Image 1 (tube, helix red, strand yellow):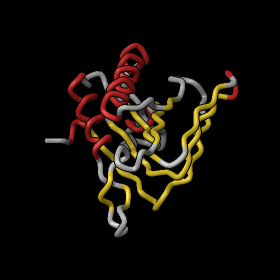
Image 2: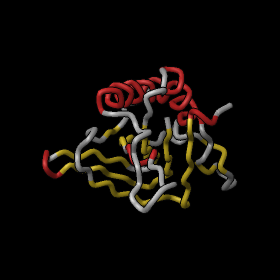
Image 3: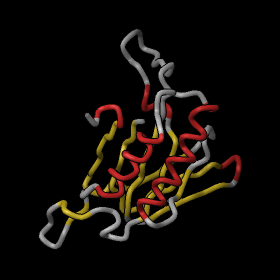
Length: 151
C-alpha cells in the first residue's frame, strides 16, 4: 500500500457527475493506492502510522503533534496512479496497481481502520470515479508512506 499524505488547511473532493462532495478543514489529505499483495497488516500499519505521525506544529513551531492531537480532519481518496511505472517509454504503466475487485475492498477496509485509529469519521472520494480534488497544502508538508518499505 502506498500513500501520499498532505498536511492541509482545507481540502475537497468532488464528483460532479454524481453531485458528490466531501471536504475538510485543517488536517490531512491522504491519496491511497493498493497492490494485489496488500494485506490487513499493511492497511492497519499504514492507518496507525498516519494517525500517530507528528507533522503538525506545537507551540514552539516544531512538528511534534499528530492529526489526533490537533483534532484535525482527514480526507482519504483512492489514487491508483501512485503505482505508475515510468521505466519504459513515455506512457506510464499501471500494471502493478490492484484492479477494482481487489482494490475496492482494500480501500474500504483502510477507511475503517483509519476511523478506528483516529476515533473519528473520515471523508472519502468515490472509488473509480472522475474526481476533482482541491487542497491548500499547509507548509507545504507532503509525506510518502509505503507499507512495503517499513522493514
